[in-house]
Image (cartoon, rainbow, N blue to C red; front, top):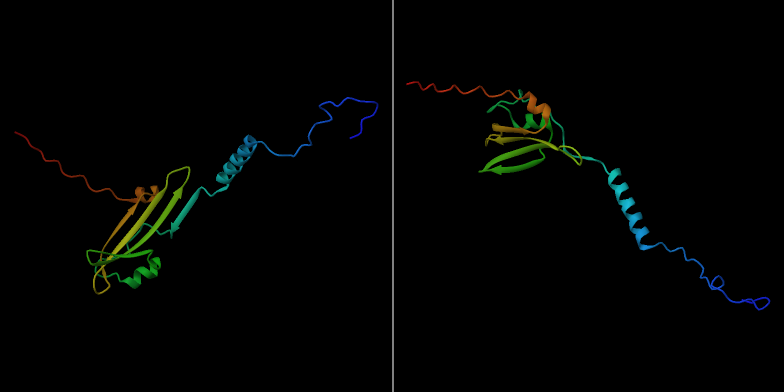
Amino acid sequence: MKLANHESITSTHLRRPSKNVASPTSVWKYLAAVAALSLISLPSCATSGREFPAQFGWVTKGRTQQKDVKLMLGNPQFIGSSDGVPVWTFGYYRYRLFSPSYTKEIKFYWNPDNTLQSYSFNSSFPDDIAGVTPLPARPSSDVSR
């Protein structure tokens, strides 16, 4: 750099060119903002399984066959065994990030001839719970002396 008229060198002449490098603090703020936007854009609900109605009037112990269940519900989500008895499980699971999650399952227990031995149904879905007929009240034992 050539100085005119014996100009003195000042700090303005020695200033380094900017490298446009972000400070570590601004990088973390940027990453935090990207992470927050990513979480917001994620689906707040995830499901697994197939939805099925909670009415089982078509199911009869000793008469319903495996082919009937497949016709109504499709292939089982899980196949297992309980004390040597074949078990088919159908489930529907709805998981939510910011509100309650719900699940329901029906399990079919099979006889050796592929007819229904028994079944069990469990649900935490409010509509299913509301549709369940409560058990009759037990008679109170009146003990009078």
